[in-house]
Amino acid sequence: MENQQRSSSGGPRGPRTGDRGGRDGGRDGQQRRFGPPMRRVCIYCKDKNKFIDYKNAEQLRRYLTDRGKIRPRRKIGTCARHQRELSLAIKRARQLALLPLSPEHVRGMNN
Image (tube, rainbow, N blue to C red; front, top):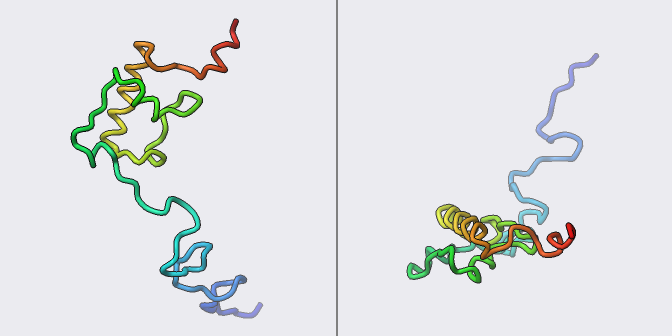
């Protein structure tokens, strides 16, 4: 067998480029195609007068999906501290039956 030297061509796909761009080809100055366009700011950090209360079910209902699950941080934009407070308040409201434990269409199936 011959000694084949590896070139810096990068392999079968052609030369490697150092742009580290994704699918958009590294176009600078244009909006990204995937992901959120900009970083969301926690509304509780922005407005210091706003606070999380387990008795305010209408406020907490915004952070639940239609299936009754708690929405993730990356979707609603809260910081880690306020997300922990939100989840605790939602769980307390569920214990007091202010919020549903399961979605409505699932609750009627056992009758």
